[in-house]
Image 1: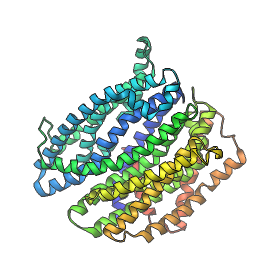
Image 2: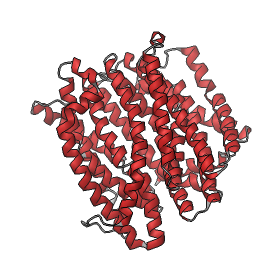
Image 3: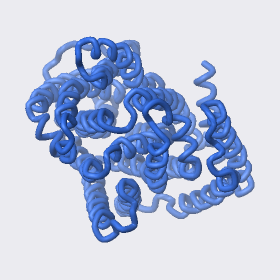
Image 4: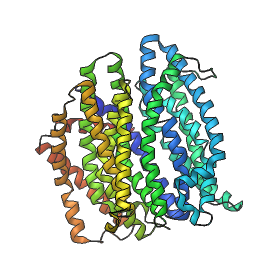
Length: 532
């Protein structure tokens, strides 16, 4: 079996679970939009949630996962299963101790942290205080999701992808089920209803860890308190430091965007958040799934010092990433308003919110393929034990993002892009990040099949343009006729998506896109998983 087919089939398993998670995430966003709209409460919630999310990326799912999987794979290969499980237990204990202390510090520093992230909130009575309260409630989410990330890493390293990929769906289940159940309680106690959603976040984080424990026990893992003294813990920590620095650079981009958005018209933070999360749907289903699978293969090849296998896995994964995300980005950009209208324009989310969120989504779509490909390239450096190059690329992207933000809110302010400019700057910074990473990879391991990747991406781009053309022409001629209730909007969006997929496969076949069999295998795996 070719490398791209292997990657595609494993990614299909993760993609199916991630698709379920993202669909539940959209349900969560619909609940948020319907109950709270895009204004005072949602702005406060989104800023408050961003703080533990930032810490999660730095200490848990992002840096820790990238550092842990290669180390765990190496320990299992060289020292045996028992030592691998001991490393997992001790890393869990170390993270629990460190992150509990960070939560305590975060509780005390919540007011200045929120003021730092969103200085504009202080101008609106009660908004800053609400964000501080929500931040404090959601801080325990951090240690819970860190334990879940260690469990996910151990299962992925053993070739178990389905259960770990399903775990994030429970965050959305916790937020929707727990949040909705607690809204009446909060009202009865005279508390802000949005507080119920914050409690739901913590509940979801706990579920995310708990659901993976039975699968770990089936593999032979046993959980008990164990003081972190394993040499592998220090190895993970040493790899996490540069990874955290690199992720800090990425979070700095989001921080700058949030800060500037808080100074713009009320609702800007929410418009950007809704658009960014919708853009994350194809990245999660395809990009993250492929990056997760590739990390295991890249780590194994690096441990065996098999550079041809490593480059083959990297090239195959990047080609699949572009084959999936380029058409997704084009379709989302073309159908931005109908999709957002269908998903969010209910209750307190109005037509103006749809227009403003769609504008941000179009700008994010420019960088969507680069966002996904960056995750794969970054994991290649972590597998090689050389995170410093990824860190340098991240800081280069921060410089680009900051320069563009200053340009758009300064000399180019008359263009009237407002919050859309922040999304555009983020996309262009992601493209710059990917360019730096690919150049650094070529320098580190030699040619990675760049011409083959570029040729495949070019054919995919042409096929995608032809595939989305009917939807673009239909919208141009019919204007706002897609509006007309949930059923009509659903038929419009669903019909456009189905037509695009059918046309895309036909044009890819006509243009001899070599990844087409792998795309078929990935799609077939996703359908098969849902049938089960």
